[in-house]
Amino acid sequence: MSQADINTAVVDPGLTTRMLRTLGLVAMLSGLLVVLTYRFTLPMIEENKRLAIERALFKVIPGAVSRQDFVITEQGIRRAEQNTEGVTLYAGYDQEGRLKGVALEAAAAGYQDVIRILYGYDPYCQCIRGFQVLKMAETPGIGDKIIKDADFQQNFVALEARAHVSGKGLEQAIVPVKHGTKTEPWQIDTISGATITSKAIARMLNDSAQQVVPIIQKDLAIVEAGL
Amino acid sequence: MSGLPDTTEKITLDTFLRGLWEENPVFVMLLGMCPVLAVTNSAINALAMGLASTFVLVASNSLVSLMRHFIPKQVRIATYIIIIATFVTMVDYAIQAISLDLYNALGAFIQLIVVNCMILGRAEAYASKQPLGATIINGLGIGAGFTLALLSLGTVREILGSGSLFGVALFGENFQPWVVMVLPPGGFFVLGAWLLIFAWVGQHRQQRMDQQEVAQHDS
Image 1 (tube, rainbow over the protein chains, first blue to last red):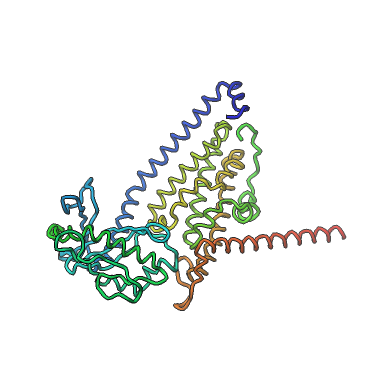
Image 2: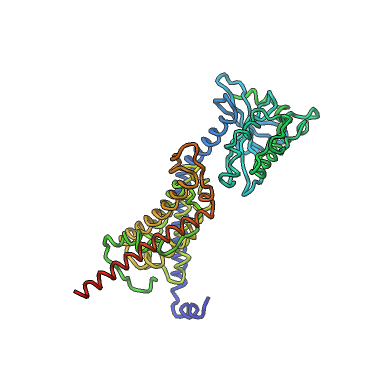
């Protein structure tokens, strides 16, 4: 507080009250407006989030028309209910209610910022069937090749992610290889010119699959029972 | 400032138009450069950002104008910031409700409208001294000027950098986009070019006016 302010405070005893009154009133009004807006927009925002997940989901699980959410807990896979802690697993079913595949979120640091994807996993062929980017800030024209590059997308026609017989981790880790040197089904042919971004995809898929694939294979019956 | 008497101005067409040209927040006053450079990589982002800022500007300045006699000058900036932050939060929720894609594209820049000096500057320099009507009209004008400026950057950058406008592809398959235009340097290039055009047009006008004056003087 400057000298001048202190002086006015002494001269005008009602000032403190007026300042408190103004700030209090404005803060209350502010709180009211924010809460009203929040209550009003909440259902729309949740609907938008649901649509966004479903749009991505039905793209990574070919043939799926309906979904059921599960949660991977320490005890195994459970149906998603409120307050269940763990990784969310989205299962997609066809018209007859047959399981077509599951989808999970994965994330890893890219070139600019964390990249978040939703990938589809087919438990019958034990392979990853595709992914959709949920959020990324990679350089346009360079990092976004992971979406547009047809050769890169070829990796995910059937990328092997087979659970290890011991029930822990994958039989073969998903690894990125230099462009044009892919020989095994668990390798990801990276994009030259977008190496960091394509390696990030490989890393996040490997990290996620190492953890969840064995659990999915173990509790597949629960997911199949589904709808 | 609340202590000073209102220097009320009459509402004329100029109250609105000033924001578009003479006091254009971007091209003349160079205010709010952060969103101008950051979110103008496509026309739709630019438009959304412009409209969101306009809403916050008009709504917050109206409230400031209504309360101008009650706000002690010692806490005026704090009060303005609370008012602005309130409307920014409302816009934030509204954009999430309208489109998540748009919300993700604009990222942190919606919340950053709080610190857009164009809005605080208008509250301090205009709304705190003028009645509600004039404030709304002037705010709409400034907002329109801001939106127009963002759009002029956004359209140019999207056409050159992605070969599309509002997401609609303009050129054939063979178009090689000039990627740097949608990256941060492109923002500076296009802004520089627009400022050049604005300065050039302004100078020409001035020259013409001077010449007319001289001609009148001679006759």
